[in-house]
Length: 221
Image (cartoon, rainbow, N blue to C red):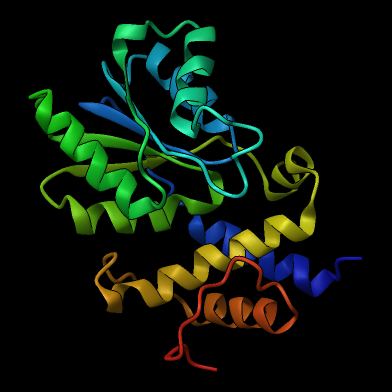
């Protein structure tokens, strides 16, 4: 049973991770691979709304996706988008990346090899990773104007779609931890994290939502 305090803390992290950007037309969309095909669905919807002429789907496989997406996350995303009516010549596939930093670096390399002129990009991720993905992209490709987007849905709706509340809260805690510790390692830009968000994260960590945390001896207690 998930307590009311845990739900409240998870909701605070969920709200903070949402960037609230107004989506508008960009040079390209980069869909970040994961277990969530909703990223491909949202990317296809934005394409049909005329928000970008070109899509890069990026991602290899992980322990979470190797059984469900044996051809690689980006390949499964591409297939899903084509099913939803996106033309194949509007999609590039980057199938090596195994983390968010590699998603950005390898996508940039692919676009530069294609000589695609990029001044702005829609970064499409899972809803609880908008801010983390944005901070990473701004660090690794600062010349581009970045906008974050994800499937519009509530925390409750997302938990229902995944079917595992504990896993979702674990992933929220992991995303929040990285947002706080990765800037000092040079992996992303520094962003202000309100005190109540830090407190919510620490309560979730201390309550045992730790399966997606990374080791960091400098993390404050």
